[in-house]
Amino acid sequence: MDMQTGRGVRLSLKQRYILLLIAAGLIIAYQFTRNRPETRKMARIEGLRANTSQFTLERKPFRILGGSIHYFRVPRAYWEDRLLKMKACGINTLTTYVPWNLHEPERGVFNFEDQLDLEAYLRLAASLGLWVILRPGPYICAEWDLGGLPSWLLRDQNMKLRTTYPGFTRAVDSFFDQLIKRAVPHQYSKGGPIIAVQVENEYGTYAKDEAYMPFIKEALLSRGITEQLLTSDNKEGLTLGAVKGGLETLNFQKLDMSDIKYLEKVQPQRPKMVMEYWSGWFDVWGDLHHVFSADEMLQVVTAILKLDMSINLYMFHGGTNFGFMSGALAHRLPTPKAMVTSYDYDAPLSEAGDYTTKYHLLRNLFSLYHTQPLPELPSLHERRAYQAVVIQQHLSLWDSLSFADKPLKSEKPVNMENLPVNNNNGQSYGYTLYETVITTAGTLNSKNNVRDRALVFVNKHFVGVLDYKTQELPLPDGQGKRTLSLLVENCGRVNYGKTLDEQRKGLIGDIELNKLVLRDFIIHSLSMKPGFVNRLENAGQWMSMRQKPSFPSFFQAKLYVNSFPKDTFIKLPGWGKGFVFVNGKNLGRYWSIGPQQTLYVPGPWLQRGNNQVIVFEEQESDGKIQFASNPDYGMPVDVQ
Ligand code: GLA
Image (cartoon, rainbow, N blue to C red; front, side):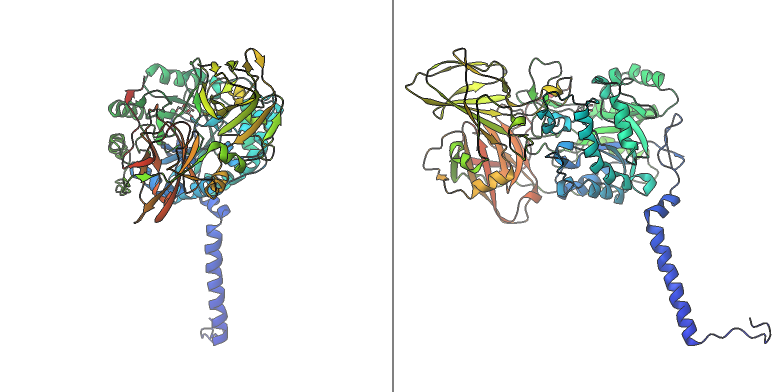
């Protein structure tokens, strides 16, 4: 008001226009700052707290209903599908490990893209309303080669993994510099979904160095981790695996009240959580397929919830150990047993994303712990049993060698990790071919230096297999100089137990013929990476199937898909042992001894029209590749 005239202030058109602009500017600025993480941070109340007998989140009592899905075991195109199905089951928290070996394939070379785009995974979880517990290792166990540690660490003959040995801590520091800065912005306090971070993994049963857990904890804190810290162990390792300020959580499958009482005793008046409730179990080659009863699972989960505890289902959805990523089991065994390719785990959501009985039982149970009805079940992806395809061409292993890295001449055998390949990071996975000239027949003795399995040839004729059990092989008579070849496969490094430092592969020492040490090797590194398989595809040496193939060989076929590509499973009933590539992606190993008899082929990895299938087979082939719409994991047996 104009106090003198008593009339309202009259603004010119121009003044009104300016005022309008200022108002619009203010609104835009407000919206902008509101969405900035710092502002969201202020708006956020308080993250996960574990100071009393119950978790609180945002100052309200909170129960973690968690489930594990590893982004590196699920094709990226299916991340959303699996997480939506998780959400629809009533899970409120996603837990995932981080596989160091994939993120840093060569020392100092990092990959956080595509299938390994952890940040995209975290953003996706957040967008679906899932909280996240991050389990960054650096050791993750997980039935994953060397428990996720990169094999190049083993180039150091004195390496002491999971200790404060400087060669190890330096490598962890440099990996965490890259990893943790990607996790920090996704923490609750920054507006993200991460409410807790696990320190290492089951260190209590390893416990080789008291200074190690404090080191890992500090490595997280100093890089900006601010959310609740956790440790996860079985009962035996619980206290040894703990860190100051971290909440100790338990891992188990069958309910034993004395475990829970023990947790309460060592950590009174804190929230109780089963970090790994094993919903099923994993399988190893040459054994049966493990299943865990859905009813028993339900009983135990019900009991855990009645005890007011939090839970994480390991696994909620297992997925697949694509490529050569599966680990090996050595614990309480005389010799290691390699893990199979599927990580179905008999989990609530199957390898191909199907709902199982466990899923439905859990959904009913979890719905009681939600005030809102659970989301509708997302629809399933169709699968197809494509028509069998006939192998068109083959290329022998011997002919493929010219497409591999230049071979190394060495007086003595050199183990995979110490080969001068991969920018001097050594060979990590796959096969290594050791060749030398012999002039006599007699007994070949591996001196137990084969890791893990060698196909033995004299002048390219197969003579037998050397492995942990068979350490001696008679070589046939013959005249003059002959080439002895050992194609040694790394079947997967042990992922659990005290022998991690010993997981070197290939020939790890001398071998003898008639008690004389063999010398002067030519060593071919055959890590079977996509680049190599691509080069093979275009090689001129492929032969038609009219000519009988020799073994080992690569086999090529085309799968023609005439409509939208669907998920399928590959079956190779007349074949022995090897691995399969589809359109440049390694689906993993197959082996007729089972239990697993099918390999999962995700639809998004296929295309309309022709699809290139390449099979590497060590010993036999029936000339065709079959497809099935359902998996065959082999003869089931209850988990003991
Ligand atoms: C332990 C590990 C997991 C996994 C399970 C078995 O609890 O922490 O990584 O290996 O065993 O599946």
